[in-house]
Image (cartoon, rainbow, N blue to C red):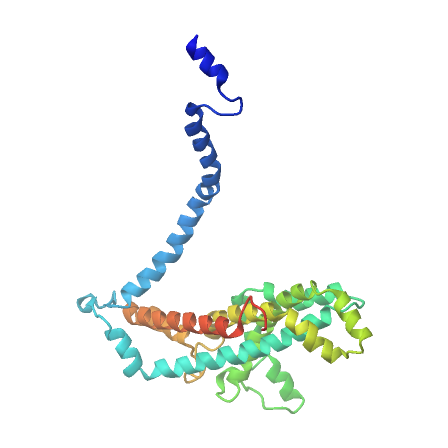
Length: 318
C-alpha cells in the first residue's frame, strides 16, 4: 500500500528513473547515424587521397630506381638539394610552367567571360549557340590533342591551305618551330579551356537580378558602368574560384602538351609536371620524381593560399 501511494503521489509528467538512460540511448543514435552512414565513403576517400600523398613524400626522401636497386636507400634531402642546385632543367621547366599558367588562365578568363555575356543575351538560336560554345569542354584531352594534331599537320592541315593562298610555305610545321610552337599549343588549350569559364560564369550570371539593371538604366548608367558596378562584383567569387581551379589544372597539364609536342622542340614546351613524368616513366627515377612532385605540391598550396587570402574569396569588398 505504501508503494502504491508513493506511485500515486508522483507527478504525472515526471519520468521514471529507469526510463532516462533508455531515452538517452535512443536519442543519441539518430545524431550519430549520418556520420555512420558516410564513414565508409569518407574512409575510402581518405585512403585514396592520403596514401598517394604520403607515399610521394616518403619516396622523395629515398633513392628509388627499380632498374638500379643497388643504389636504393635513404637519401634525406639530397633529392631536393639536387633539384635546386644541380638540375638546370628544374628552373627552366618551372619558369615555363608559370608562363603557361598565366597566359592560359588570363586568356581563358577573358574569352570565357565574353562568351558568357554573349550567350546570356536573348537572341534567335541561343540554345544552339550555347551547345556549340560548351561542346569542347565535353571532349577528352586525348581527342582534343588528336584534333589539333590533324589541324597542325604540315601535309593536310591549316599550314597547307595557308600556303595555297601565299601565306607561309609548304611543309611548315608550327609544332616543330620554336617561334610558333607556343602560340600553337596555347590556341589548342584555349579551345578546350574557354568553355569551362563560360559555363561557370554563365551559371552565375543567371542569378543576377534584372531589377538591378533596370534601376541602373533608370539612373542613366551606361552598359559599361553596369558591367563594372553590377556584373563584375556579382561574379567576383565565381571568377576567383574558376581561375584558381583552372590554374591548378593548367599547371598539372600533361596530356595535351605531351601529345602535341612531347615537351619539344628543344624543350621549349616542357612543364614541370611533364618533366616529372619523363623522369619517372623514362628514367625510372621515382625518388627524384617524387621530390619534384613534392616541390610542385608545396608551390601550388602556397600560391593557392596567398591567392585566396589576397582576393578575399567569400568575403565582402570592404
